[in-house]
Length: 129
Image 1 (cartoon, one colour):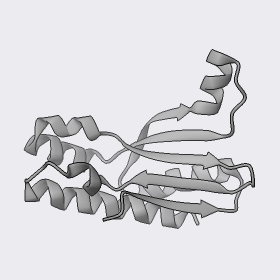
Image 2 (cartoon, one colour):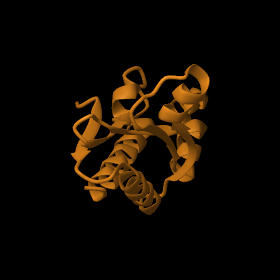
Image 3 (cartoon, one colour):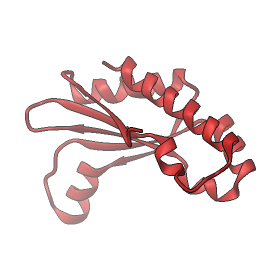
Image 4 (tube, one colour):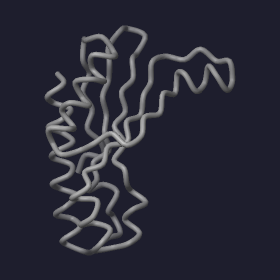
């Protein structure tokens, strides 16, 4: 089982962020948090850092189902999607495979949800390519 899903893209950073956001929306996710690490490090520590955003994506339907089955599953919400630009200009988009985070869960209903969420995250990332 792969622990994450990553794609590298030769497009401008903000275009990739917009495309990933649109792809996530098509898959039923909304972006409920955005962490701009570049801006945060510059403002808090005076450090120049590459373009690096963490998008907190939430699919309310799946979030409700999973926390209804097991209340502590909220620890895994939202699903984080990372968009970062490397020195060579490539933009990398990554998301953790939700199934990988469920090593200790024995609930097959939660596993089924994780598989569905993982597939939707993968589709959203693929659409940005």
